[in-house]
Picture 1: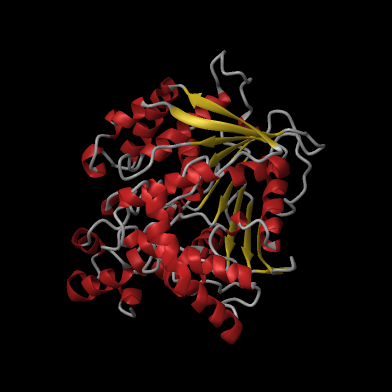
Picture 2 (picture 1 turned 30 degrees about the vertical axis):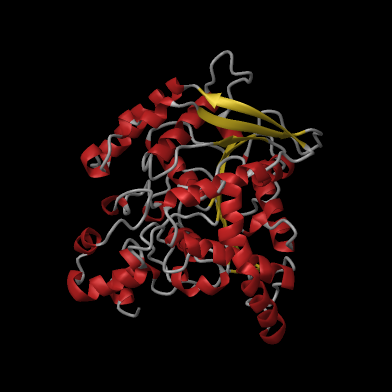
Length: 457
């Protein structure tokens, strides 16, 4: 049975009862969130069902099914897209910086669990895609560039599955978008993705003579991504700063996954209103939060290292020992001095919501611009649902930010060094409450939030 037929047989046909049940629930009891239409309730039900299979199906099978979406990601009619390749000598240049950063963190190949410097997949071309609008309006500025890092848990998706994002940021940001096909886990775990993202950045600011474009001023670059790509965006920014390289004009994280220790409460509290896998978004199921809780109570007590040692791998992206590394979980960074302006956008109903809130609150006094936008009723990376008013609003906010922080920008969108807001489904703004994530200081940096909170499970 070919991949497409297998997908239809295993995932589409069995959804009949789900669709009927969702319809009855929507019209009998109302939607899960007040603003959800019947159409969106169906979309979320299907997405939740598909996401639930992540812990049940072999990873390779799910990766193959994800690649089916590559054929469903056409270039927008209003865009021009062209293939690009980052020459491998830029990986060599980036490797020098990555090696220095890992050494400073006390991380070697033994601690990583693999020889990242000799990854055979790094011999393959580092592919990318340029996207720009066919018609340039007044918002366009030559040289303004977005380096886009797609989401997918560090092990799924590609530049093709995220062409919707590239097109929207080219259109609304008045920029050319360079979308990167970085290496994926588990075949190429951490630090492969950071290595590739840094190589792409070095390529953009200092390209070879035959690249077809002039060197791009770092201040004319915005690095951005969604979900895991958002986490990679933050990790790349930290790597650029820590390596002493010129920092970009800004970064944007859409529902950024910046806490792989799963320490915040929304990971469990919002499972009913999001489509990410339940039980803590653990990719593999063997180390769900409930299993962590049982081990913590039964044997590990307050010893986090002992708990992580007893657990099977929590994430595909890296081993348990490195979940607390700031380049894996950027929420743990303590100092943003020297960093560029930052925008975080998340949905109030998503599992990763609290990570964006805590990162922003934690750095409320940091010497850089931080804009946080939490959208009522919205799930993870809701920007992909372009028919939603909130999605359109968030896309425009992102475009405004890109144009604001880059060279020759319009200045729209950035009106304060710190701005933490909730945004309603009709676009009204209100200040984020001060106690949005209770006891976050007790949770941060502790797997599952620590024994105190795991015990409640």
